[in-house]
Image (cartoon, rainbow, N blue to C red):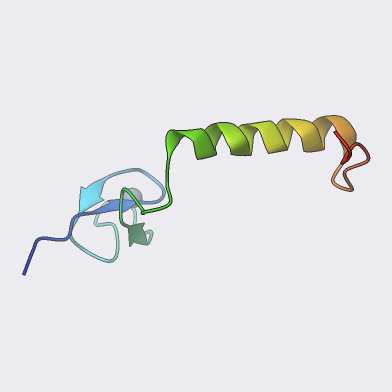
Length: 62
Ligand SMILES: [Zn+2]
C-alpha cells in the first residue's frame, strides 16, 4: 500500500490526514489528474472576461 500524501486546501500544509492538523480544514491530493498550470491561466482568463464583460457572456462570439 503506497503512502497517500495530502495537502490542506486552506494553508497548503502537507499531511496524511483527512483534516489539516494545523487549521482543521479538509485536505486533498496535491496534484489531481486534471490539474495543470494551464488551467490556472484559463481560470484567470475566464475571471478576467467575466469582470470585463459580465457573467452572461455578451461577447461569447469571440
Ligand atoms: Zn490547514
